[in-house]
Length: 167
Image (cartoon, rainbow, N blue to C red; front, side, top):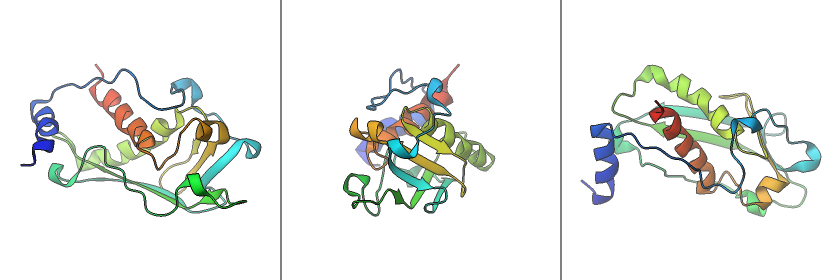
């Protein structure tokens, strides 16, 4: 076994409860921001909606097939959008595993992507699965928020852990 995977594997096998008290992202993060709208004037980049294609897909895998916290970017980064381009296609593919994970949990966790994303200030997320629309405001982007960075991944990753290990 790879020595880098020993600690996460032990946490999984023993059922250790990990608590994350703060999420190190550059924007405020709370339920109060759910439902916030990013208007056209505030828009830095958007995915899905009428402008482009976007989808979210969550799939269960075996523990040895999932690398915790890994993010891969294929395609252009929103840091380098050409002048006048604000819409890009996006695919969010989440691979999950766990000691007590069941196939029946996939659609439930897939719907949580909306909540995890929507709690970030300056981020608008509407819909789910193949009918979603995500907007990132100029303010959130200027603070350093980008879906291609591990900060976006960490939002979902840490929030999933908070939800999973609560009470």
